[in-house]
Length: 151
Image (cartoon, rainbow, N blue to C red; front, side, top):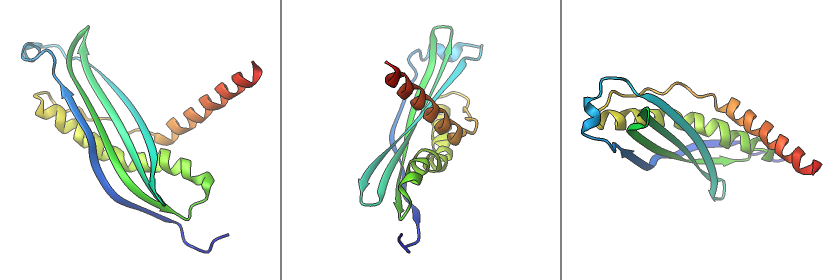
């Protein structure tokens, strides 16, 4: 076992991708009823060097009223993290839970600002429990693995 201390540091946080669409402008700004808001979140981690990882948190927010789209915003907020001297079994939870938890407030701010700049009231996203999402994904993986073994 190594006597070296674990290292976890944020090297950089940045916008990797940002897009906004307002397909029904300018007519959509005349609508008086509030649209339904739909939010989708996903994260992906990649090794980019020795002990260096990029985690990308993608947040998509769409607003629709029936079939009429108000807007669609997609933000990919990324971070470069240095993670060293951490047991292998702890790496996946760090990359799937800890890093997205760090990135989420930045992504939430970028989403809200983009929607506001498009001419709509800002959308403030509720906090996300990335640990619960991670646990749910593990359960789904175990179910699909057990189905494969039964066939």
